Amino acid sequence: MKIAVEGCMHGDLDKVYDTIKYIENTRNIKIDLLLCCGDFQAVRNEKDMDSLNVPPKYREMKSFWKYYSGQEVAPVPTIFIGGNHEASNYLWELYYGGWAAPNIYFLGFAGVVKFGNIRIGGLSGIYNARNYCLGHHERPPYNDNTIRSVYHVREYDVHKLMHLEDPIDIFLSHDWPLGITDFGNWQQLVRYKKHFKDEIQQGTLGSKPAAQLLEKLKPSYWFSAHLHCKFTALVEHEEGGRVTKFLALDKCLPGRKFLQIVDIESDPGPYEVQYDEEWLAITRKLNCVFPLTLRRGDFGRTQLDMQDCRQWVKSRMEDRGAKPCEFSQTAPPHKPSDSVSNTTFSGSPRNPQTVSFLELLDLPYVLDNALDSRDTPTSLPQKDDYSEDIPIEDEDDLEDGEPNNENRSS
Image 1 (tube, helix red, strand yellow):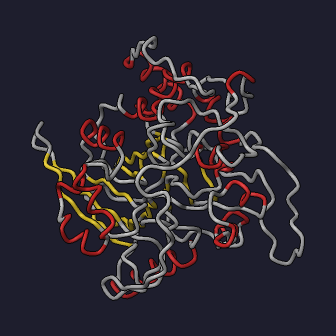
Image 2 (image 1 turned 90 degrees about the horizontal axis):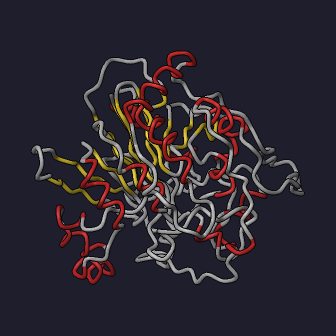
Image 3 (image 1 turned 180 degrees about the vertical axis):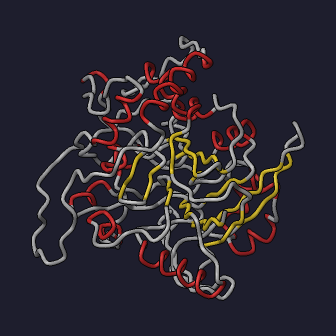
């Protein structure tokens, strides 16, 4: 299976898909899957930009809306995670994962799916120690604080992923696992990114929960983005002699090292996105402690009798099938011909895909639960760890002779 791995998308789907077509034509190959490591920016219309934590001068419609509206169709199946520059109102509708557009699948705030026999897991967002133990208290419309905290990784989602026992082939995170630079050529990295040196030497560059997941899951491949540079590492795990190949990629700008093709041994196609039995069982078992306020989740009281739960899920999947629910629009797409915004809706509607997913697992819909007034923050200082304030860069560069494109605003 040939997989194209892409760093930060920043809404430039047209450019990334054009680059993939170029690679296919020049190398005479067929790409089976595109993986994007965050900052996807699934902006459907002008209203979505109110939930996008990007300085106003960098807010652009870009090209996702074309794929959402059906004007364009992704030429290759695409799976992505969220980063720290997202239409967070839309991704919250698909908290458990789902089709953001036809042939473009969001893994959810945390998730695992199968593509053929390849098992792909992911964790959306970036790590911030101050918000890590909080529940998912943010609801659109976001204020100046929650527009930033909504994409901070939460302990609950990591807790779910830490219960995975079956082998993971590929794992995606937006920020890098803490300490990953110890396993690659960090000296070369700091020649290109001089401001990383102190954090590397102090052991603060990266995400602590991502490092915990790397140690626990030991996937064959781990792909990241966020820091807008290419970096490779080889992690040799002590247990079982397993090895993780780590690759971080840049942002989508001409010439940047933002795209790489990885050839992974797999069963022959055709391939399609399917639900993962173990992940559904974990989601069903832990949904009862899903924290939806500022309070920390009480995970200790949940007994994970996974064998019975997996059998229950397996039976449901045999009856229904393993394919996710079909895509459906929940907001009007951008119309370039309209001089005035046509989007007057507010909040996040119940996405039919999420409703279908919860019905499959016989779970209640809780994403629109209102905050208890006692839990509403009056002010939460927000300053993201280690790279939130790094400015956008605009340099160009080329990889392997292909036209490359990227962008990052931390």
